[in-house]
Image 1 (tube, rainbow, N blue to C red):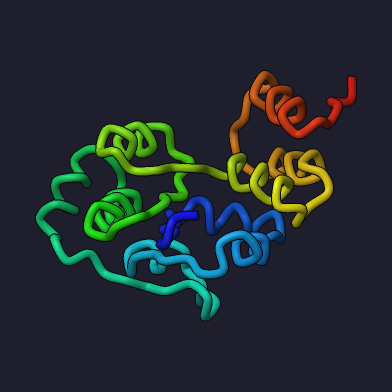
Image 2: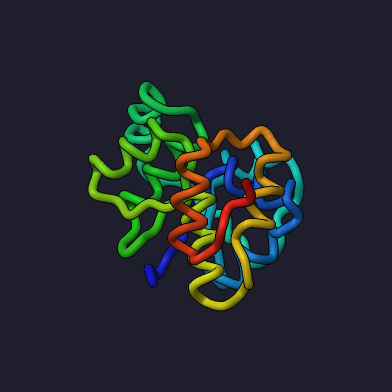
Amino acid sequence: MPKIVISDTSILILFRKIQKFDLLKSIYTELTTTPEIAEEFGEELPGWVKIQSVSNKKYQVFLETQVDLGEASAIALAKELEDTLLLLDDLKARELAKQLNLKVTGTLGIIHKAKQLGIIDKVKPLIDKLLETNFRISNLVIEEMLKLNNEKAKH
């Protein structure tokens, strides 16, 4: 597992919305985020979420020409630190992070990992909760996720 796990705002908000914020702690023990993301989140973060500023603000500003402020700060911080995993859902930000040779996972990857680690029994109830939020996910992706976790979709 990477030494430092950096989360973007959307991941924090989604796991709060589905009332599974503690799942992040169960999987990663500690998360790191930036002051920009903490501000976007808008609520006090628990003590296991460390807030760290980006040193190279010029690089962050450059990244902001391609992705939003929170994502830019997360990617810039990941580039400054070693052995990181970025928690990002936005496709454009994920593609940019991958171009920069950063490791990335998103909400579904986190849920899959929770199942692999035996933290949750099934992914389907969490996917159902995600579908009640503004999280967009195709039926094909849902089917693949259920198949990957040896679960059946209800037809």
